[in-house]
Image (tube, rainbow, N blue to C red):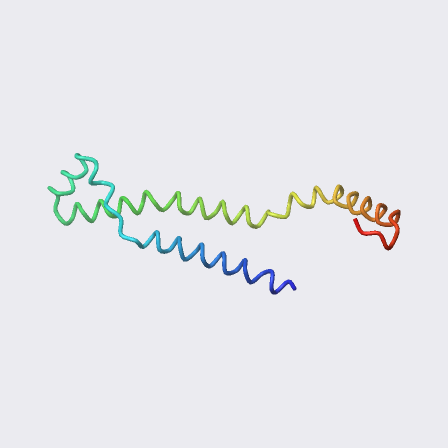
Length: 110
């Protein structure tokens, strides 16, 4: 039964990853063209300046990307930490359910 429960989840995760990949790879209009100063500077510059702009963009994008990935990894690794603290209340809940089930007549369905 667990194998059938994990298969839809795996399909959903693969679907989300595929949509994200399509969005990243889809051609989008350059946002820098909306800024007149950026557009004129890029148009008037040579190939060396264009390469510097591309390098600058990569340098500015890399740190937030790595920080986001790091945060996701930390959250994933510590996802069960709060469940350990709440485990005592879960045990009390199960004990209450067992007591209620013991008090109910065996043939009666609610």
